[in-house]
Image (cartoon, rainbow, N blue to C red):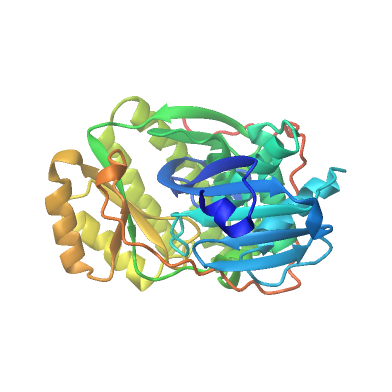
Amino acid sequence: MNNFETIFGLPAQVSAQAPGRVNLMGEHTDYNQGFVLPTILPHKTTVQMAVDNSIGGKVELFSTNYQQRIERSLHQQKINHWSDYIVACLQQLQQCQIVIPSLKILVESNVPIGAGVASSAALEVALLKAASELLQLDLTELEVACLAQKAESEGVGMPCGIMDQMVASLGKENQALFLDTRDLSFEYVELPTDYHFAVIHSGKTHVLAQSAYKKRRQECERAAALMNVASLRDLCLSELNFLDQLPHVLRQRVVHVVTENQRVLDSVAALKQNRIADLGELMNASHLSQKNQFEVTVKETDLLWQAAINRGALGARQTGGGFGGAVVALVPARVLQSWWDGVSHDCPQASLISQGQQPEKASLRRVRWVFPKISSGEQPLLAIKLKVEPIKMAKVFRFGT
Ligand code: GAF
């Protein structure tokens, strides 16, 4: 008997999984219709599900991480609880005229929470993939990602972009997902095998819904409006000389987004041409831009970034939404152990989440699930249509040559 049967007294009908992610380049660019370059982690969330007509229109949920059972009605709004992510996804399906029967749902995960590695997207995507199979909806991976992003922004109230849900749904091992968030076109880019992308939790938990994430997004939208463009994606490097009409803070935000978009394009080129040292430099520039221009790093991630470089990483950067969470460092495979010995000496509060290509060797320190408290009354700022239509560019994008 597996966990599901022990907990619910009936066998699971379907099971689906989705991974956590580490973003290698392109931070806070997705809600500006820009570029991102994430990849997946070996850590996964598993959702098992069965129909149970005896529980009358409700869903009964169990999380093994919390060791907690809860019954939810799909008429209910969020209650600032881990189950909100599940209810929000099922409500998205209802909005697509899909009838949701009474369900029993089990969630198990080893994706660290509060580390900036997209645990909520892993839960949403695993849930929607399981529901799609159970209810024979035949959702595509793209549709799953779009529904998951809508669930998080509309149902949970976290106005995120689409990067995390896209890579949780479409990501592949040892490949980065080079994604254009404007039209959701993407390409897989092979990652080098003789280097590791080590992901390290700084020890400072990030809770995006309580952070200035929403404020940053609003600043970007205000800057775009003042610059008379649909989004910051429409600005190019040469236009950075003409930001005089913007207040200082907005100018800083624009500089980050425009240069970060360029860094994604440059990182893709560096990976394809095996210019790994160049990729390291781009990662360092990205961290400094997140620190000085976008102001989303914290003392703990800055110290960890410095230690990672001092101890021999080719480059490093804060990854994910920021305000705490993780740093990703590019480390030659042959020095990985001595590098980590040095970093963990300099930053004793840090823990290695994953060391990239050899997940089975990663020293995993179990991170307790801590679901963020989500403030109420937040409106979604971005509604992505279920059927994605390419959006015409307002301007020809002029990055790179
Ligand atoms: C969080 C969000 F969910 C993403 O959409 C993205 O904006 C990221 O922060 C920052 O790049 O993970």
